[in-house]
Amino acid sequence: MAYDEALAHRLGDALTPLPGISTKKMFGSLVFLWNGNMLAGVLGPDLIARVGPEAQPDALAQPGTRVFDFTGRPMNGWVVVDGAAVSEDEALDDWMARCRDFVEALPPK
Image 1 (cartoon, helix red, strand yellow):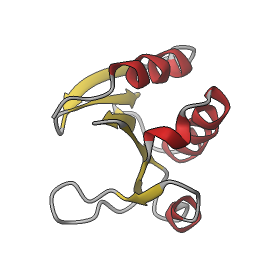
Image 2 (tube, rainbow, N blue to C red):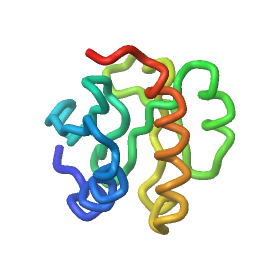
Image 3 (tube, rainbow, N blue to C red):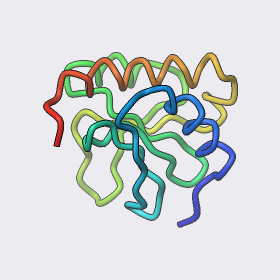
Image 4 (cartoon, helix red, strand yellow):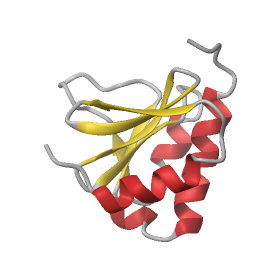
């Protein structure tokens, strides 16, 4: 599956200031890792966001979101955000803040 390269570029720009950011192709998508922990990615036209299990219900209450169910088993702590819902930089920045809040508490890999 191809991923939205423009969204991937915007995501990369938003995350570049963080030390320890890297990318990896996974799930037919591009995933961004922070200190070795998956943080977010682009799957098709959409953003995949790792918000953590406790924040997942609130994240799913936001417009344009759904459970990340890539393999037939929902991924706990992850949501998919419709690409249209992050078309503005402010919305993308908000989602990246949600992801950082969870992932920064994880130990580096």
